[in-house]
Length: 280
Image: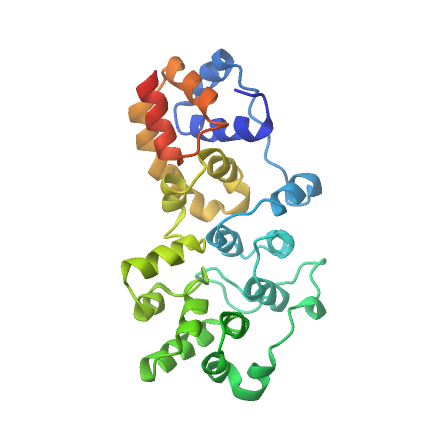
C-alpha cells in the first residue's frame, strides 16, 4: 500500500470495526501508520481539502443534519453544495429532525452572498414559480426556494391537487432533502429511481458504504464521519461490520491484500472486502 493519508485513513476506518487489540497488531504488521487524531472544525488545512472533494449530495445533507454552524460553514464552501443548500445555510434553516427555530449563522457566511432570489418566485410565489419553469435550469432555480418543512408540505399538496411539470418534479426529486413520500409521489419507476441515485441522492449511509465507489474515496470520507456526521455514521459502520468480520476478521494476510488493492480498486467497499478475503 502506498503510504499516504487517504489510503491509510480508508484502511483505518475498516480496522476500527474489529477488536482494537487485533487492529493495532494488524496495523503494525502491514505497516499502516498509527491512527491519526481527527481534525477540529477550525482546522482550516484539513477542512479546505475536504471542500475540494466532490461527494454525493446526500453526504452534505448528513453534515447539515448536525445543525452545527461551524460545520455548515464548511458545507457553504464545498464544491458539491447546490444553491438550495447555500440559501438554507445563509438563512439559518435547520435540517436536523428535532431542530426548532433558525440556526446561528457562521461568521464566514453572509446573507448577502445567498444565491439571487429567482424573478419567478417574486412574481408567482413558490408553487407558481415551479409551475412556470420551462427548462431544467429554471426548475432547479425555483426548487432552490423550497427550504422549510412548510415549503415541502405546500409543494406536496400542490402536486397532489395538480401534478407539477416534469422539470419541477425532477428538480425537486434530486434534492437530497426531498421527503421520501414526495419523491415516491413523483414516481417509483426503476429508471426514475436510478436517475435520482445518479444525482447523488442515497437511501442513507449504509447505501453509501456498501454500494458507492470507488471504495477508497468512500472509506476515506467515512473516516471523517465521526466529526462531520456522527449522528448517521453508525449506519455505515453497521452495514460494513458483518462483511469485515466474515471476510477479514483478524487475518493479517487478508488485511495485507486489502491494503495493496485499495488504491486502485474501482468497486465499492463491500466488493473490496470480499475480494481481499477471497484472494487471501
